[in-house]
Length: 448
Ligand code: SF4
Image 1 (cartoon, rainbow, N blue to C red):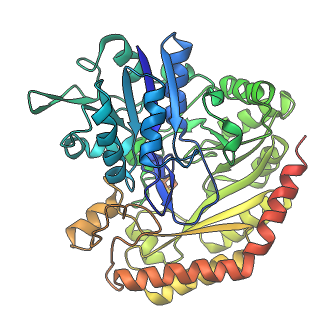
Image 2 (image 1 turned 90 degrees about the vertical axis):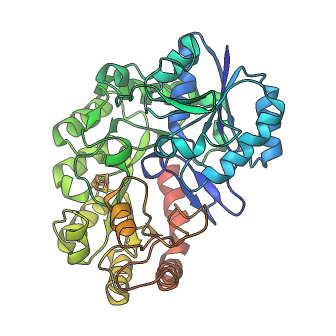
């Protein structure tokens, strides 16, 4: 048994980031970044650790076109292939799988959170035999041992019908603790902008536009502190890495555990610099100081909206704009780079409130910012809100991504939302972009 995982080519005109948005993915039109899809590294690395032959083809990293991707997969001589799909890229991924199927007789399965919610549609493709809906990499171990028939979370074709195995649970604590250190050497990992890690899964806050509570659940689950420290030490010793980006939905959700993790990293000699994403209202001066000493050099956070009615409609708790400003000040005084995230076109937003959002982003003085258009990711409250009102208007199959307009709101149509989104990006670029690369490279050059 030889299993190949595929991060398929980006759709034309985009660069895919399939691990973003809780695994639903993001496609950017202009990004220079190349980032790994961490869950396929966990899956392939676990198989190898347990004696199953496994390989990984990252066609995003290698800028493959569909033909090059298929050739690279066939060259590995697999007995089974898993395509890691995402929301905005799924239509294109299916075309690549159908092309592979012309020359490959073995089973082809789709996996990832989008495959889980669109399993029935995906299984209509002649390129796909099965869909793996669960998040656990241990599912692939079971499939390697016994095939698709009994593994929870699998949907498969049989005699022209779709057969559903029992639902898969989220990863258990035992599984989290048994996750392997990713085998970054399965690809030319130095071509990534940076490698990633994840120390916790799930988020109980339930902001209505956010995919994380849908794809990882509302129950927060974390790896043992010792396992994370061990991973950092190995990334440094085995791969010579100096920086890792943490992909936790909310890194500092549990203050006690965050403090324990930071203290343990300090005790281990601060093996790596790292970045994280978190809610600013879960940070305080003491924790920020500890995070800085533990190697944290970059904190990303969602502002999302400055419109009170929008935040209320989406169930987004906020301590207000003054708290955001104060936390950014504390992070900067701790020497960290700050990265604000903003969404254009959420419910109740107007042209005026969006301009206030843009002004706030510019005034806040973060080193980096990202703007996206409200995206009705499957299973979110935002999707139900938009669908119920007939506001999801996009026809483009790649629309489930932040740079393609897909949903109007009560006050603005798609064209106006896209115009404001482009205006936000342009305003930011004019004011901030020139200083960002210099500050990031200066921070990274100071790594031990
Ligand atoms: S707090 Fe962050 S991760 Fe949690 S639901 Fe809200 S936006 Fe998503």
